[in-house]
Image 1 (cartoon, rainbow, N blue to C red):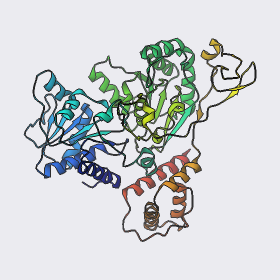
Image 2 (spheres, helix red, strand yellow):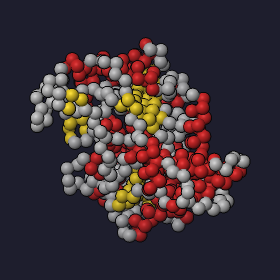
Image 3 (tube, helix red, strand yellow):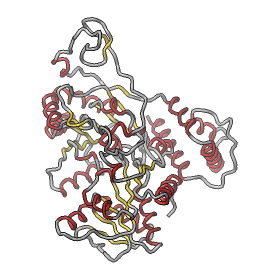
Image 4 (cartoon, rainbow, N blue to C red):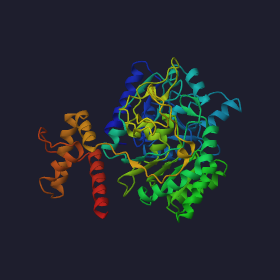
Length: 503
């Protein structure tokens, strides 16, 4: 099994951590990094050394996904999941459902399974049975994997945060799809309390959204027709009532839509997932069921009416969109919840610390600081002072407050695209990347262009479209092959060009 360069880097960082005595590392693995491939590589090494290893996963879909990867890696494994046909407790490597192990230990009183190495997928979830393993096997390496290492107290269980690559870097290399964000509308949150710094009160959100949704939903439909490109879409609402109302509005507008929630039977939910993935209807709407564990690369658009205060929720939700798919050169995020204003582009969220339980817990404190998004200002209608909120309440404010009817009325306002300045982003990438990477990229572009009999200016132009500058200072060499990351970038550029030409 051949790993990509950043996957090899991740494996080496894990090994270094264990060699240094930090045997509880946590790998920050953004969407499309290939966590399962990395897990299979590590477990193959564990098997080859004659040791016993466990890979803990928390969803049925991930069990089946892991089976495919472990078979491809030539691993002798068994599956610990209720009545699974591949059950084999004698196999050196086990793919284990966390829920199954939890029931075995908790309900049936069985002792903890023994192993010499463990990997824990979605480690931010912090299942109690995993905590028992961490406490009981203090000398055994237990490695966490997650895209969102922002959970409270995660640093009390894991002792080394590893970040081999960021979502922005994966995107620049063609492994993640760029996202167009459209924002500028939200429900009024002035009456919504926070149960903690990272969580809006669900009861308050539900109450306010149900009270306000009549004036908001029409706006949602208009924006979807304007910006949604008739794409496969998932929608988030703060309440079941609003989700069902959204479905009805889409249907009245001639758009096929279905509501899904946790009260449905598992087989009925699965049937809806599969029908939506096949394109049998356009919009799959929920309250928060699709926030995690729903990976459908065909989904190109999110309609988000559900405000969140949690960085975990934001990154997980936006991550639904960024997986690449044939013919998908970009994705679309229609933000009716002001989430973009709170957090910025999901690709730019990079973890910096694990929460150690010592300070007030705020998820955003654990990520690297981002440039503050400029708030739109306007004049106070009474005193003409510039204000950014719904009230003129600064030190010199006159006390004016926006009338209730103005807060709720649907003024047919359209969302505005939150495009970052392209050249600014390209120049940042150019500064951040190494000369070695840029030299290899240009050299492989030249080989690709030569193989395709392209004109001599093709490779320098493609280099400029990635880095925003001409490769004047780069001295290419004669490349013998084209790396997978360069091919991924070329494919993405070709799709983008073809779609633009068709339009």
